[in-house]
Amino acid sequence: MMFDFAIIGAGPAGSMAALQLAKQGYKTIVFEEHNSIGIPVRCAGLVSEHVIKMHDEGIVNEIKGAIAVFPDGKEIVIGGDRTHAFVIDRRAFDSSLAEKAMAEGAEYVLGKKVKKTVAKKFFEIEGIKARRLIGADGPKSLVARQFNMGEIGFFNAIQGYGKYEMDGEFVKIFLSNEIAPGFFAWIIPADKARIGLATLNKNVRKYFNAFLKKLNVSTNEITAGLIPFGLRKFARERVALVGDAAGQTKATSGGGLYAGMKAAMMLAEHADNFLEYERDYMKSIGKELKRCIFMRKILNRMGDKGLNSIANIVEENIDLINKYGDIDYPSIVAKEIAKKHPLKTVAAIAKAFI
Ligand SMILES: Cc1cc2nc3c(=O)[nH]c(=O)nc-3n(C[C@H](O)[C@H](O)[C@H](O)COP(=O)(O)OP(=O)(O)OC[C@H]3O[C@@H](n4cnc5c(N)ncnc54)[C@H](O)[C@@H]3O)c2cc1C
Image (cartoon, rainbow, N blue to C red; front, side):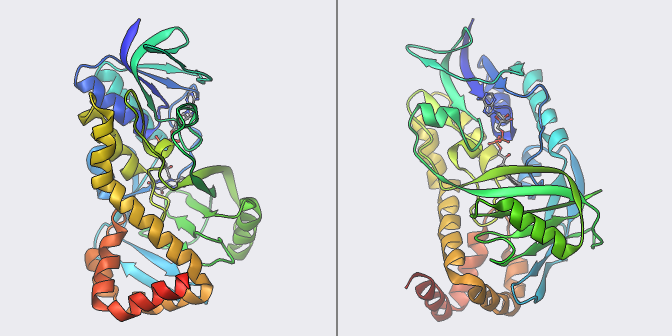
């Protein structure tokens, strides 16, 4: 049987692409290695309103703000005025998105790990042929490797569920190279708190155990995963990548749902020209992802002393942050702060790089 599109991976990026392509009448098939969609969950499930506007299933909590804990122990409350984010149940979110795609006519093959795609005039997977191929197969993308889409880096992430006394409307993030070198640790309130961290260090379990000890909590259902750090090339004439496969995550926060699902929508808009999908994406969200990479590099060169000094900047600019803060576009607020304090900003960047 001949399909217009074969998609590998039924995560949010793959299913969003399937939904949008099937809606346009394209014959679309999705291969997923797991028997059920949405598990195992390797995600804290914290998303913005932008994501909920694309798919509003599986919301389990609304978040009004964040408490940022700095290396010296200083805590700063950000937001609090309105709903700034949502916590979702990824299993419900992913599976309901796939159901929507199926209802539009997309076909799903579950429990099938694609090991090889034969690329000739058509793409062939397990005897099924397709004119075009989409890799929505996560950070270690097989499609990216097969079609030489380039190498990227990764943050090592880990998360578990546990009991932790906290305000149910605020997430807590811990910025410290002692707790999570090169990234941060988080506690997200839901029925059970989602406690996790990511780091550039490979020994993520060691840091996680130390973090749990510091909090004096235990967790279960622990899962580890990778968060891409960097963007790959993500389009060739007949092959495209979306979501984590392409490296479409924010290097500042690790969030990938918005950037990946938006990419899937843009890819479907350019279903007949993948190269335009890449061009348009890089002119819009891709630009923001690059800014996030730049900001992450600065943060990681600052060390804990630099992070402590950021606490002062955050405190001084809390109104700006509350006004312009958008978890999917962190550069907007960074730009506003830089405009207000140009000398301090240049000095901080120079200090980080010299
Ligand atoms: C610990 C952790 C916490 C996170 N927290 C957040 C958060 O709070 N908010 C946020 O926005 N993002 C978060 N992220 C990132 C987010 O989870 C990802 O960006 C998102 O899942 C990417 O979606 P995707 O569809 O591109 O890939 P995935 O969700 O990884 O889906 C890829 C799918 O492809 C399948 N697959 C892979 N290879 C094959 C193959 N060869 N054959 C068949 N199937 C295959 C996999 O089984 C999987 O179902 C977090 C990530 C981690 C690791």
